[in-house]
Image 1 (cartoon, rainbow, N blue to C red):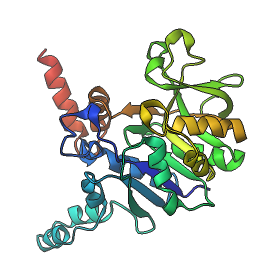
Image 2: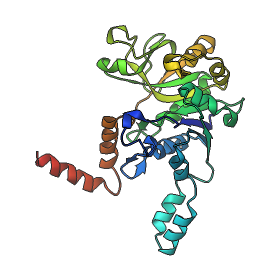
Image 3: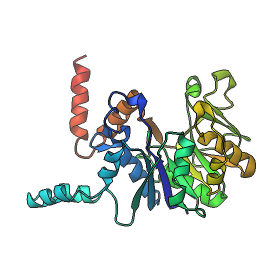
Image 4: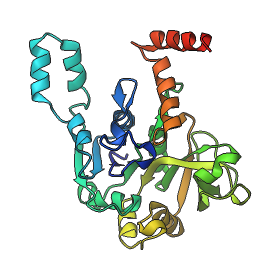
Length: 296
């Protein structure tokens, strides 16, 4: 079973400007915690025990968030704020490690994943989670990530998590072409190709890749040999196409809901969804929504 995950967090977050000018986009909060924490919690719930953050020089806030804050803890303890103390001490379970490594030059997502190679090693498969996207499995008993990792374990084939999107939206996503029928929820299907942001009439399906991957270790050697592609960057999509040709790639169809927090409307939608069911603030938030709705 996959126990390691890579979270590429080195990007500038230009879609979130000006909010992300001085604050990492991954640290923008959804209700009461930053986006990155939801993604880390998703990984931990799926059985991940070693998380590699691929960061840059302006992302120290992410590392600090998951690090010990001795002064704050001492202050909370002295003031008897034991619930808050337990909360910050419990951000990461004792059996989970979070390790950071720098991507010195912004050379693309594929390069960011490759930067994690010294920590992941050369003999274990691993997951990649893009922190722009929240995967909400609140209505399901098991997480989609756990299901995808189990599919990798069973099939021993790379898995890309996909969801069905409106046909009018396909040109915003990487779209996959299954070899036969589209997979049902919680199932995988072999891919014959992947198309990056196709026009509606050229899209082979409306199944979009949403930023969750389970990959064999030899993707590192493929990435190392992948020349710069679009934008002069090393593209993970190019390496995945090579991997598909060599040993196959499958699409794992999720059943939950995704929120693209890398752009303002997706962030606002996530805030609405998570705030409405928050155990402490949910009832009050619902009252606020009603009040503003009545005032229209």
